[in-house]
Length: 240
Image (cartoon, rainbow, N blue to C red):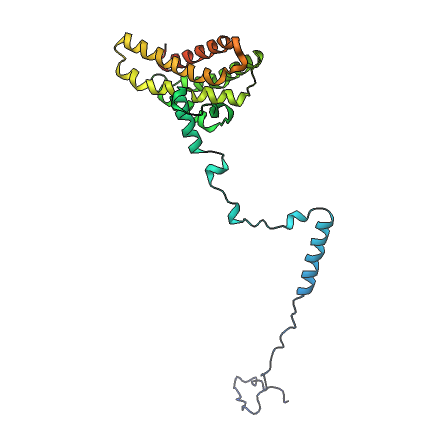
């Protein structure tokens, strides 16, 4: 191959024919790139084996949710609306002649039903005083604890959850008389009679469930504090 022609020093250009021009054509060889996938898999397999040997294999497990294992929210929270509705009817209609199995309120206690009743009573009490809401919940919890301790001292076979549920559900009569008190509030005598009726109603519903046959002659010792507890609940609502 002949060397390229350079222009002379006098400033003239010399044209070179295509046959004499240097051959600049060519190709660039592509680098030989290879992915070592086998090595990567080997490393992953080695890491997996190491984790499993060390007892950390659970980190590699993928949790696949089975659609059959997904439960409704009410079932997850253990809320049975039918059971709560039946217990409400048992408390509002405590007469044995009506044929309700009232013992289910005590023998099958739940938390969400009584809590809903207490919160409803608290919301109604907002009409009178906002500050009593926290007190109502506090009295429900610690008042039930007092009744529970007294019942155990008297020889009763009752759990705290049962007392908490019965005391909470038995607030329903006070919720029922609340609208009546708004209507007849200006008539003091009628209002007092309705209050007494509501307290006796609530106390009878709770005492008939908690003061069982095991108390025998000691029933008044348990019924009286229950009666006082509902008087205090009513005083929180009326502001007395």
